[in-house]
Length: 439
Image 1: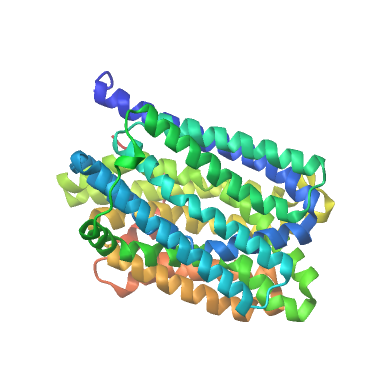
Image 2: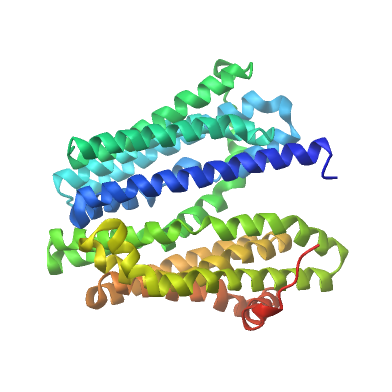
């Protein structure tokens, strides 16, 4: 099997995706350190508030279409132009709605002029999203190399632009225009790769029937994606909104800056459990077909591995977070070090939640997943209102941990077909040293 053409094709495709992720992580982290040092906590927080605010509406530009369109391109390659054309139109109108909403919200929420400008510029970059459907075309053909090349060029050009801005001491709004530059680079690169493949965008066509079908399939994913983002990222918005009238806008932005810096560091570790879960997914799916005993054993084994990864990563991080942040970002980001040590606790929920995706997929519990995401988002917002005023960014972290505790663990108690999974997760954490290799 290892020598088969099919295996080599999928292995090469996965290798390119992994390479892009690692390169992006290293380059973005490196330039992020320089940008954070240059801007300082207050301006860095203002920029991250704007990106977080626009991000609340990101689901409108993805529309939950990626997996659906890729699946249909594989099943019906002759419908390529109809699927890509219709998807591009849907994404364009979704982007327009996003721009209108963030523009209107910036007026209603009485943002200051600079913050409103940041929000509108970052939101406008989403108008280039429709060209991203070309990436789905190459994904369907298991040829991610082409799009990975484009993405890596975008990463390096963007990093170079940020370095220049730091050297010339550019104003804050220029860093918002980086998002437009990144979207433009991806759009141009995707179009070039698509033409080199012998296909043309002008052949795309819109179909009302296909649009109705795609939206009918994707609307739960739109809500799911928005709820997940709210649960994970709304803290950046709420910290400023809740604190600005209590401590002033400058101090509130600085608090967002400290929080955002710690959050970016912890997110840099997020790809590790994802890679493990995707690697083990085929073995777990095969086990489901072979028998419930083997299926349960492999899920249990995966949870053990996820918990072990949490221990190996979070324990050193908890004790070294503060000196790491001071070394990388400077003394003014020392408070972010303490926040990062608390974020290390959140890795438990990140790892176990990623592992739980295998159970949800194999049991087809997508409605359950939607319910837990919405409950988690609502709970996170509610807890933020109570915890941020007295504890500031620390309260936001505990709100996130509390909401994830409910959505990832406790919600399993409410449904008969998920209680067994809760047992596997808990037993996996309690017996993590018994981990065995999956064959």
